[in-house]
Each structure stands twice: as structure tokens, then as C-alpha cells.
Length: 233
Image (cartoon, rainbow, N blue to C red):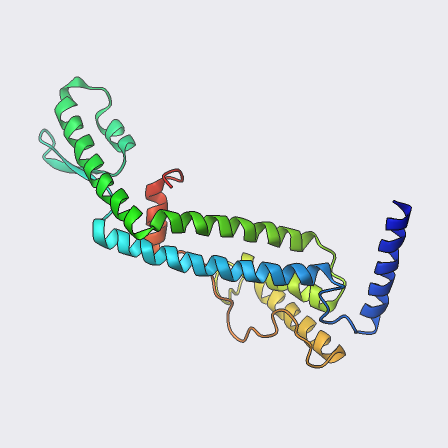
């Protein structure tokens, strides 16, 4: 244990000396934060790719089948009610025996529409793509948490943390609310300082010439998520 502690101390001493003369401006071997940033960036790109894939499949599924639903004519009220999951039927009719026929018809229509949805889902692979995206997103979040907890030993490591914060936390592209413009400015300052120390060195975020792309779900995706109620996939 003492030998290991001595090795860590010696490594940190070398890292601090190298950081002072700028030789670690882009050295992920000596900077755990920068090393994690590279791993997280790959996971981030993978999650975004899978998000686009499942969104495309969602659109196909909705266009082909439509959200599972049943329409129920309520003769006494002269209106048509639409239900999209069994809980809606329960809320509408309760256990009133007078609505047994309407309830049975609504349940049958909804089940038939759900069966068509499920069959098309299996055919195009939407739920499988959704599960894959969720797993990738979970891994990405694990990595960003590890990145934030890791010690940054270089300016590039600090830039890596700010870059990840902007990509993961900014609510909208080029958001003008505090603290996002200030964080973008700080990242720009760090990138200039690092490249001044070591011309040509890559600094996380320095290659971003426009707004950070958002992994924002479009309306159809949000609608499917609402329909699924978090437990249907």
C-alpha cells in the first residue's frame, strides 16, 4: 500500500511539473479527465445516432398504424370519446354494469389496434432500437459522471469538463440565459490558453464553430413516450 501511495504521489508530481511547462496541454495519458472525455464523446455520438434511428422508426410506426386507440360513442351524451390505454376505459366507465357492452367493445377495439401496433413494431424493430438507445444513454451518463469526478490535470482536461457540461446541460442551442454564454466564453478562453502553450494542440470544444447540437426529441417522439407511460417497452 505504501509503495502504491508513493507511486501515485510521484505520478502527480510529474503531472504537476508537466502541467506547469505546458507539455500536457493535450496528453490524455497523464490526464484522467481528458481520457474520460474521449470515451464520453464517443458514447455521446453513439447515443445521438441511436436517437435519430429510433425517431425515424417512430415516425414510420405512427404513420403506418397510428397510436393505439378506440373511439366510443356515448349515446346518452351524444359525444364520441377516445381512449388510448386501458386506464382510460376504467376512468370512463368504472365498474358500472350499465356500460358493460360499451366497455367490452372499447377493450376489444383497443386490443386490436394495439396488436397491429405491436406487430408492426416487431417488424421494423422500433422497440429494439429504443432499448438500444436507452442503454447507450445510460452508459453516456455514467461516463459524464465519471468525467466530472475525475481530476483535471491540464487545461485540456478543464476544457473537456466544460465541453461536456455544455453538451449535456445547455437547454437550447446558443442559449442566452446564465450561465451558458459565460461557460461558452470560459471554454473559449481555456482553448486559447492551451493552444498558446502548445500551438496546434487539440482542445475539447475548440473545433465547435456553431451551436452545440441538441439531442432533442421531436414532438412525435415525445408523444410516443407519453403513450408508453414509461413501461411499455
